[in-house]
Length: 142
Image 1 (cartoon, rainbow, N blue to C red):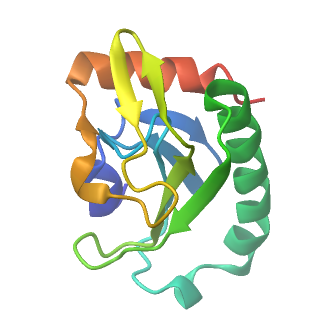
Image 2 (cartoon, rainbow, N blue to C red; image 1 turned 135 degrees about the vertical axis):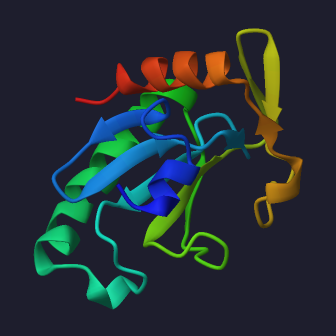
């Protein structure tokens, strides 16, 4: 696995695996259900991915959106490709909603709503919370 995938807590943060992509729980939850869609490739430019990865990305995105709809009932969804610190191809997937969503006694507000997501206000999860939330989200993937 590439360094970006490892930085986002793989394998403990793994939600779903595809041939070319991993869906990982984002350890700092911008909103409840924030994920990382990470290419397994060592590519550091989107255009370097193999053609098959682009085709499979459609399936990964459809699975993410169905799972997050069931889990968090988002109103909008943001896909952010922010490869400044973590160089391998990946997207931050941020479900967006007005208000907040609770999970196991913790509130997850969307502090940036209705504007840009406020990445700095993310709720940082413990390793136990990451494992539990990743498992719950994984149950929503078909």
